Image (cartoon, rainbow, N blue to C red; front, top):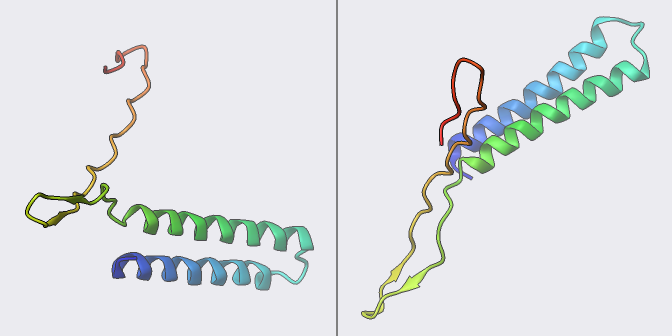
Length: 94
């Protein structure tokens, strides 16, 4: 994992943890359902951060051995963005 991705993940994990703790500490009348909702929200944020960190890792093609013995590992091109949905004003791109 690149260093910036790791820092972003750790920061999101800490922020999510603090947010859930802060939400529970703000009111003594919080129920277990409130705690579960805060935990779910925190887990969602952590998973989003993890997804962002994983997507920042470059992807590579299968290594290729050249006739002279060199090993060539090509980086995969970035994934294409899905086409935007068509709206009445704007036709869909193809």
